[in-house]
Length: 192
Length: 134
Image 1 (spheres, rainbow over the protein chains, first blue to last red):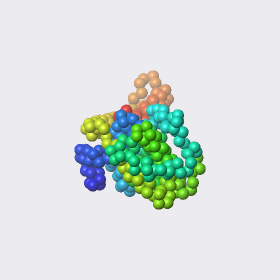
Image 2: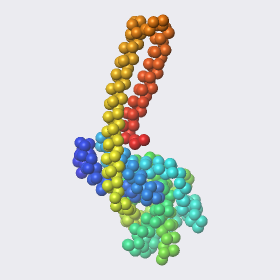
Image 3: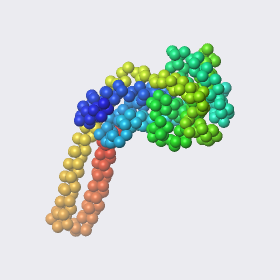
Image 4: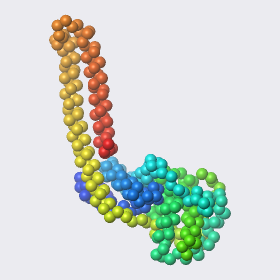
């Protein structure tokens, strides 16, 4: 389907690009907001990414999937924006009472009691809690989690999209998962 | 980036192995499926399409400018070469001037203009290629 619309856009049918907007805007927004942590900035990032994609479409070589190519643009735009604004995103690692850096947690910190914790979260609460926790997570960690679990990318896929090394990606994912559980546990305590 | 995590964790990025770890991983993966954030701005598609059309129009204008620049650059260069040749043949020399007095400054000026204009055209071409609005 993507190929058909790529051809249409390349033949001059600008309106055919709406297909890509409809199809990819939500995932692109999720990726961007993971990094920049602000919905308005994320909207700008996604718009810029779509613009770059539109301009680069004639040069798209189809060696990779369109989605991989596009999400790589979104990730790069998000990281570039994060650098540019130099905004201090308060990482939860630095917050008092949330000292969850990898060194301070036991190896099974993320595992113990996870089953009970996960089961106790009601369906309707899941989305809200997960997204709140992701919002507080370090940009790289929330990005890795969304790409790995939501976009169902492999470790290699995450590396391809982010430019991180494989070892780095695994460490980020490991920490992200553990910190996520810790955040969910905290959230459950404050909102039983 | 500290690398103290146990080796089995590094292989998968997971926090636990074994049946309990697998179940937890599956449950977590299931939970993470709820982390998709829908675009909250209802006019996002229209805004983006408007931006794309503006950008297209802008690029078309740049292309037009680029064509005109090329044309006048070609005309100017040819005209400059012609004057240069005529000067060298003493056909255009005003009375009282020797070729050495006029030809060298003219040639220097000519080369300077060619380089400056060429640089501007190259910049315009790059701007068009990247689609930059600035």
